[in-house]
Image 1 (cartoon, rainbow, N blue to C red):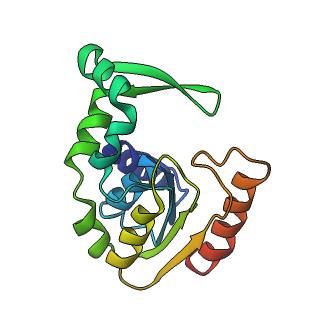
Image 2: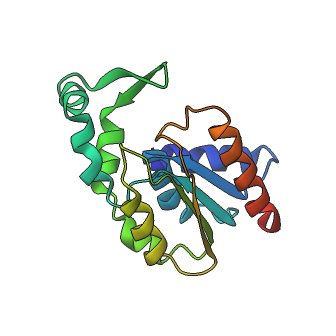
Length: 169
């Protein structure tokens, strides 16, 4: 996931579309924080519902992780859509030392999280925010679930990110 993000940024930059902002949700939020270190064009990072220590959230997906370890990949439903997770994603998650990546980010960081997220607890956002150095911002996505499936929740998050990121783009 981290390497894929870095490669995607490199591709966009090489295509003349410079990437200055990375946005990630859940494990993807952790991945963009880690990937930003390898992306000099990136000025700002936004994470939504990201785990501070991704391996500690793995228990939420025990059956899925077991299938991935056995078969190399597994398909699951998230927000009504079929997604496929592969073994390298699980390995990336287990290997992530997010604390050091956050501490040495040297980019603007927006941490967004819902206090009613039952998948990744709000304490993860607090840990990310406390570890980060300035410039950093925290926005509580009050009333949202982990997947932002409620009416206008994803659109609200997008508007907040857009307004926050404006000075860095």
